[in-house]
Image (tube, rainbow, N blue to C red; front, side, top):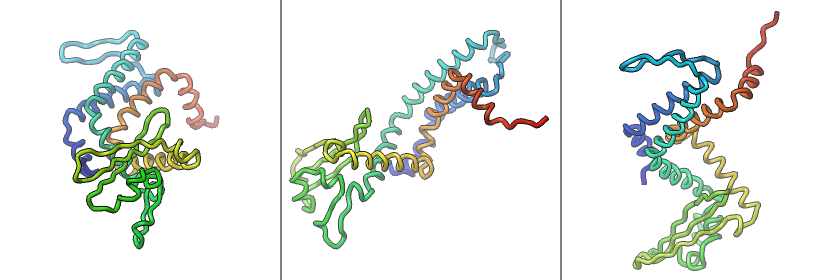
Length: 232
């Protein structure tokens, strides 16, 4: 699994991803410009001839369909990075003492959701050298959260896997705390780990562009509130 810096470098060096992101960004910005300013595209230059647009509504629909197609194409290239981003932020989340903490002076004194939800075999053997234990964080819709345990003997090829539903095992209070910590971690990731915006920003821009087209009347009303009025 790549580290955060290795993932950032891989994203920067992915030519296919960069080209699809550029196309999606340009199409989204054009539609946003049309929605926010009410501008009209009179004609466009191609390599062979000029195209003059007389039906602006049709142009908007064309841009919306183009953005949807480009988002799908972009996702094809970005899927591998989505998986790696998930592993990185969920790993940082599980590093919180809420999930696992151990007394440095007393190895047997451990607590946290990951430890408390583990099987009896883990509780009794997790300190043994020939025993392995790992856990991960799993998100399922709608708002189902699990801690997935993997454990067994390093001498055997067979291992055990168990998924623990946090809400069912620990109740509403700890479940809501889990969602709160998850929201905090994901929010902070946009400011502290630029690879998150590198991958997710084109989707946000495309979604905003499509919403601005279909909610144009509401957008105009909002803009009127934001535009300063001039005193006569």
